[in-house]
Length: 119
Image (cartoon, rainbow, N blue to C red; front, top):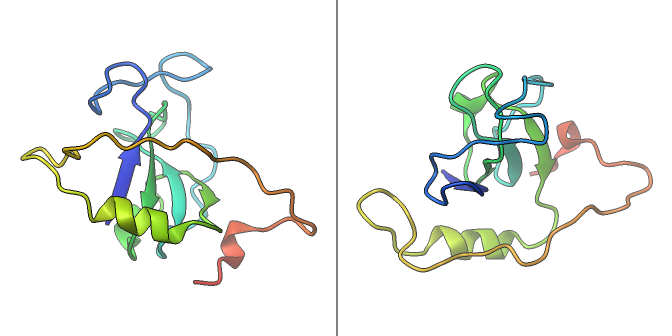
């Protein structure tokens, strides 16, 4: 359903830090992550955003109104599905290291609005 990452403190899913301190408040809960390819903030409740993020791999209506969605995968969805197929341990962690080695912003004109997601 989702692939998570970004724990730069403990590398085990328990760490949280941001450029604002430990956490920062929710900014926009209006975008629904009900389709594959949305990128959002992982949190432990309202206003607890830190360094962890997730990428949806399926429809996830349970995330609506609970997580800030801030991006979308527009290229490389096959890579996301390959990550999803990796073996995991009893805690759901991949048995092999997975790294994002290239990512960035696409300079689109006109700007792409995540609410216009075509999938």
